[in-house]
Image (cartoon, rainbow, N blue to C red; front, side, top):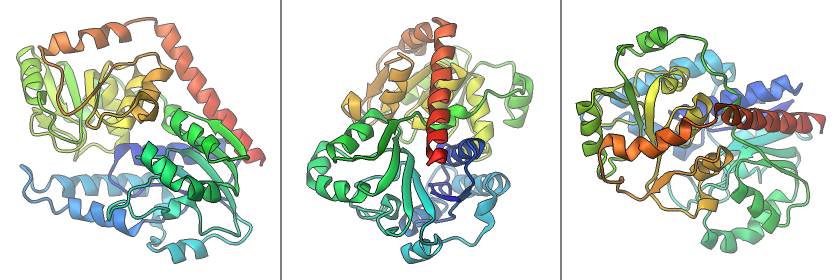
Length: 371
């Protein structure tokens, strides 16, 4: 039995779909898996505080979002019905000696702050000295060069005992090489690439989202009010588009759906958008799966080799990502013209790249199951 650690409990569409997709992927590879219902105290506290953001334009937005996510997670991930584990000691006791345990997603961060906890967090599996350790789809999140040098010896000691590491991006893969890792090391796409396009038609998807099926939609899934976003969405509105907030509350959008759509409805609606504007990694992944033109943003400029979003764009040869707090100037049509043109290219090539992503994930899952 493989026990898996993820961020399934945070109200984040990508985190939930990642956990759901990973469990299904490993089970299809013949590996018995069970999600550990671990809820890191600091991260769980942040999720609780979000529900109290009474100064937002809609004070109940995050309370409704929390309710939507709770219902979906309970339905799709049965293990969350177990009593939550909220201490590292309890987590350690939950996995017997000799059992296998795997960390997954953005869990290898070096954020010395109260939100993410201190390095190394429980997700580095340093407490599991008597268990077999694996990692699948992990990213060295916010692990900049300055941290890489400072913490590299400790990283080397932590990963030395892992039997297999499947890194989610080239930067994490190279970091493991720098750390002297000698086990099985592979690079894989995000497990959510295994999600298929919906079989529901546009009318049903829009009905579920309480949106008109006869209006062209612009999806907006951003974590902050970028400079220029208000003007860009206003221009799109003048051109006849309906702008839809798909994640955090976006006060510039015509309507909000980040509180009412469950993760799969969110994923399906992205397919129906003419353009998606996002700074979210899994928003970008969903756009790649659906071949939806996407305007990618990153508030903090990162070298291309360290950006999760850029790593996805590279896989599909769609390298357009605007970095910084300010959006490019111009009308909506002029800003998105180049993106639309690139996405209207060879559909066969795009499908082939998507097939490669899925094959790489299946191969890595079978490799882990074989061990």
